[in-house]
Image (cartoon, rainbow, N blue to C red; front, side, top):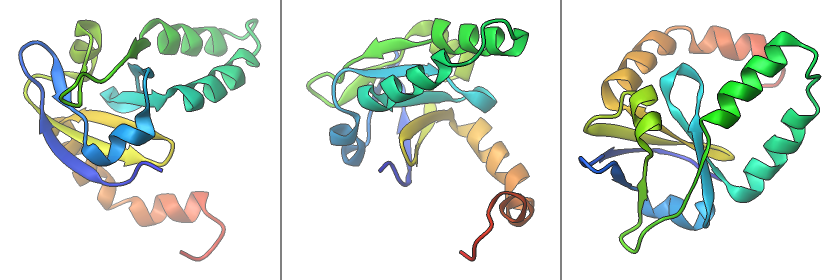
Length: 143
Protein backbone atom coordinates (compact mmCIF):
# COMPACT_ATOMS: atom_id res chain seq x y z
CA UNK A 1 0.00 0.00 0.00
CA UNK A 2 1.30 3.44 -0.95
CA UNK A 3 1.27 5.80 2.06
CA UNK A 4 2.91 9.08 2.96
CA UNK A 5 4.12 12.35 1.46
CA UNK A 6 7.64 12.95 0.16
CA UNK A 7 9.40 16.02 -1.19
CA UNK A 8 11.50 15.50 -4.32
CA UNK A 9 12.75 17.40 -7.31
CA UNK A 10 12.69 16.72 -11.01
CA UNK A 11 15.77 17.47 -13.10
CA UNK A 12 15.95 19.16 -16.50
CA UNK A 13 15.81 15.75 -18.21
CA UNK A 14 12.57 14.86 -16.43
CA UNK A 15 14.08 12.38 -13.98
CA UNK A 16 12.70 12.15 -10.48
CA UNK A 17 13.74 9.90 -7.61
CA UNK A 18 10.95 7.61 -6.49
CA UNK A 19 10.78 7.28 -2.69
CA UNK A 20 12.61 4.12 -1.60
CA UNK A 21 9.49 2.86 0.22
CA UNK A 22 7.56 2.94 -3.07
CA UNK A 23 10.06 1.26 -5.38
CA UNK A 24 9.27 -2.35 -4.51
CA UNK A 25 5.54 -1.66 -4.52
CA UNK A 26 5.79 -0.05 -7.94
CA UNK A 27 7.66 -2.87 -9.62
CA UNK A 28 8.80 -2.70 -13.21
CA UNK A 29 7.35 -1.76 -15.57
CA UNK A 30 4.72 0.60 -14.16
CA UNK A 31 2.31 3.06 -15.77
CA UNK A 32 2.22 6.86 -15.45
CA UNK A 33 -0.75 8.82 -16.73
CA UNK A 34 -2.61 12.10 -16.36
CA UNK A 35 -4.44 12.15 -13.08
CA UNK A 36 -7.20 14.35 -11.78
CA UNK A 37 -6.52 17.82 -10.33
CA UNK A 38 -3.40 18.24 -12.53
CA UNK A 39 -1.29 15.59 -10.87
CA UNK A 40 0.10 12.36 -12.29
CA UNK A 41 -1.20 8.93 -11.32
CA UNK A 42 1.44 6.18 -11.13
CA UNK A 43 0.22 2.58 -11.03
CA UNK A 44 1.99 -0.74 -10.55
CA UNK A 45 1.29 -2.86 -13.63
CA UNK A 46 -1.06 -5.17 -11.71
CA UNK A 47 -3.20 -2.24 -10.50
CA UNK A 48 -3.17 -0.70 -13.97
CA UNK A 49 -4.44 -3.95 -15.45
CA UNK A 50 -7.35 -4.01 -12.96
CA UNK A 51 -8.23 -0.40 -13.74
CA UNK A 52 -7.98 -1.02 -17.48
CA UNK A 53 -10.44 -3.92 -17.16
CA UNK A 54 -12.91 -1.72 -15.29
CA UNK A 55 -12.63 1.10 -17.82
CA UNK A 56 -13.13 -1.31 -20.73
CA UNK A 57 -16.57 -2.03 -19.30
CA UNK A 58 -17.70 1.58 -19.75
CA UNK A 59 -20.19 1.95 -22.59
CA UNK A 60 -18.43 3.50 -25.59
CA UNK A 61 -21.78 4.91 -26.67
CA UNK A 62 -21.65 7.36 -23.75
CA UNK A 63 -19.88 10.62 -24.53
CA UNK A 64 -18.38 10.98 -21.02
CA UNK A 65 -17.01 7.43 -21.11
CA UNK A 66 -15.31 8.07 -24.45
CA UNK A 67 -13.90 11.40 -23.28
CA UNK A 68 -12.54 10.02 -20.02
CA UNK A 69 -10.95 6.91 -21.53
CA UNK A 70 -9.36 8.96 -24.33
CA UNK A 71 -7.89 11.42 -21.86
CA UNK A 72 -6.73 8.75 -19.44
CA UNK A 73 -5.23 6.23 -21.87
CA UNK A 74 -3.75 8.68 -24.38
CA UNK A 75 -1.66 10.21 -21.61
CA UNK A 76 -0.42 6.87 -20.29
CA UNK A 77 3.19 5.78 -20.57
CA UNK A 78 4.87 2.58 -19.45
CA UNK A 79 8.00 3.39 -17.44
CA UNK A 80 10.81 1.71 -15.53
CA UNK A 81 13.12 2.81 -12.73
CA UNK A 82 16.77 3.37 -13.54
CA UNK A 83 19.62 2.06 -11.36
CA UNK A 84 19.41 5.16 -9.14
CA UNK A 85 15.70 4.60 -8.44
CA UNK A 86 14.56 7.41 -10.75
CA UNK A 87 11.65 7.48 -13.12
CA UNK A 88 11.79 9.49 -16.32
CA UNK A 89 8.58 11.51 -16.57
CA UNK A 90 7.65 12.02 -20.25
CA UNK A 91 7.53 15.64 -21.44
CA UNK A 92 3.77 15.81 -22.14
CA UNK A 93 3.05 14.50 -18.63
CA UNK A 94 5.47 17.00 -17.06
CA UNK A 95 3.68 19.77 -18.97
CA UNK A 96 0.22 18.55 -17.90
CA UNK A 97 1.19 18.41 -14.21
CA UNK A 98 3.29 21.61 -14.45
CA UNK A 99 6.32 19.79 -13.04
CA UNK A 100 9.36 22.03 -13.25
CA UNK A 101 11.56 21.55 -10.19
CA UNK A 102 10.02 20.90 -6.76
CA UNK A 103 7.62 17.96 -6.57
CA UNK A 104 5.59 16.15 -3.97
CA UNK A 105 5.09 12.40 -4.22
CA UNK A 106 2.19 11.02 -2.24
CA UNK A 107 0.92 7.52 -1.59
CA UNK A 108 -2.78 6.98 -2.23
CA UNK A 109 -3.42 3.32 -1.36
CA UNK A 110 -3.08 1.50 -4.70
CA UNK A 111 -1.28 4.28 -6.57
CA UNK A 112 1.33 6.97 -6.23
CA UNK A 113 0.65 10.58 -7.24
CA UNK A 114 3.17 13.19 -8.37
CA UNK A 115 2.32 16.86 -7.84
CA UNK A 116 4.03 20.18 -8.46
CA UNK A 117 4.85 21.39 -4.95
CA UNK A 118 3.00 24.71 -5.24
CA UNK A 119 -0.12 23.08 -6.71
CA UNK A 120 -0.10 20.42 -3.95
CA UNK A 121 0.23 23.04 -1.21
CA UNK A 122 -2.65 25.03 -2.69
CA UNK A 123 -4.76 21.87 -2.96
CA UNK A 124 -4.09 20.95 0.68
CA UNK A 125 -4.90 24.47 1.87
CA UNK A 126 -8.19 24.51 -0.04
CA UNK A 127 -9.16 20.98 0.98
CA UNK A 128 -8.25 20.84 4.65
CA UNK A 129 -11.18 23.01 5.75
CA UNK A 130 -13.67 20.76 3.97
CA UNK A 131 -12.01 17.44 4.92
CA UNK A 132 -14.52 16.68 7.69
CA UNK A 133 -17.48 17.50 5.45
CA UNK A 134 -16.12 15.33 2.64
CA UNK A 135 -15.59 12.43 5.05
CA UNK A 136 -19.11 12.81 6.43
CA UNK A 137 -20.57 12.62 2.91
CA UNK A 138 -18.50 9.62 1.80
CA UNK A 139 -17.83 7.41 4.80
CA UNK A 140 -20.48 5.61 6.84
CA UNK A 141 -18.31 4.41 9.71
CA UNK A 142 -16.37 5.91 12.60
CA UNK A 143 -12.71 6.66 11.91
